[in-house]
Structure formats: structure tokens, C-alpha cells
Image (cartoon, rainbow, N blue to C red):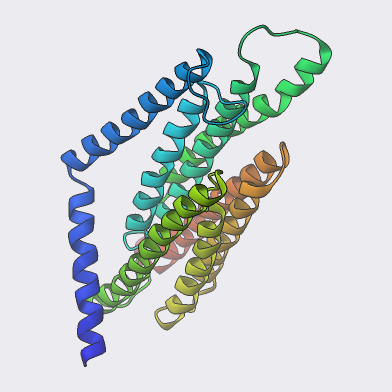
Length: 291
């Protein structure tokens, strides 16, 4: 009984945080924080350019863009966590949004190495190819994500309102633990950066946690439905998360290839799933005896 009350308290905490997250003041605060980090990066870039203060070797003003994107990604991941209880499909779409921003960030990061005079030789053009790959890969993921959202048709897999609330409650508990894990990883990154003088983002580890979260939701959904269509759809979402996790550590070109494959997979499954369910619903409709 005490454990049940403890879980209910955690769900109330999640509901409170979610209600605050979607308000206008929070959005403005997020924007202010991202802009503040961007301006701070520009200031340090200017100091490095004037040889007044150098954070590290090879530091440039383009790091300000990378820094702003990294801070933005933190808030995007938090937004992803709040989406999981509402819709697993929307949470998958959010994952692709994050990957597209990661590709853009990587493109900006590489451009920072080519400030100043540029020698337009064949070697330089070859070095630009990974940047072009990341940029166009981000555009492709942007397109696939838009089509994925547009194709979504949400079907309830539970048989009653009580079951639906129970399923949502479980996903809220998962989101709470994901939030705690994400905050813990952030603290670990900050401590590591202080000790090693190098900031390493743990988004790869977080995506690994998302894989296990997706699989858990898939297995837990078996108590509500064992229909093949639903199981295959959830399984494809979990597999897409694995592809996206590999994208974060894959070298140039392969990262875009894996992200696009994952996007086309979930987009194709969504279209087929919607088509099959529409056929089933049409078959279940009572036929007019006059026809």
C-alpha cells in the first residue's frame, strides 16, 4: 500500500512538472538560457581571437554555435521525456528531431575549423564532404520527421479508461526515472569536465536508456493487446531507437545513412499500419443489405 502511494506521489510530481514545462514563461526562460550561452561563447571566442584568454587550443567563435546547440539539445531531451506518456509515436518523432539538430550541430562544429583564409584545393573540397553530408542528412531527417508526424493516427490499445490511465501512469513513472537519469548524467558530465578539462556529452548513454525504455513499454503493452500489428509497430520504434543510438557514434556518412534508414523504416511502418487498420475498420463496418 505504501509503495502504491509512493508511485502515485511520483505521478503527481510528473504531472506538476509537465504542466509547468508547457507554459510560456518556461519557453522564454529556455530561450534566454540558450541565448546567454551563445553570447558567452562569442565573448570567449573574441577573447581567444585577440589572444587575451584562450580556453583550449583550436578554440573559435563557432564554438558558441556548438555550445548553444548543446544547451538546446538538453531541453529537447527533456521535452522528449515529457512526450513519452502522451504518445510513444510522438516521442519517436522527437528523437528524430534531436538527431537532426545533432547533425546540424556537427556541421557547424566542423565549419569552425575553416575560419579565415581558405585554400580551395581538392583536399579542402574533400574535407567539406562530411559537412555537406551532415547538413543534407539533417534536411532529410527534417522531411521524414514531418511526414511521420503527418501520417500519425493514434489508436488506443487498452480496452477501458481505467486501463488507459494505468498504462499512462506506468509511462509517467518511466519518464520520472529517465529524468533523474538524465540529470545524473548531466552532473557526471560536469564533474568529468572539471576533472579532465574536456566536456563529453552523455547523450549516447541516454539513448541507450531509451532503447530499454521502448522495449519495456513494448513488453508492458502485452497485458493490453497481443495484436500483431501493434506489436510490430512498437518493435519497429524500439529498433529505430537502436539505429539512432548507433548514429550518434557512427563516422561521417554512416551516421546520416543510419538515421535515414531508421526514419524510412518508421515512416514505412506507420503508413502500412494505418492502411491495414483502415482495412480492418472497413471490414468491421455493417454492410447495407440494399447494396
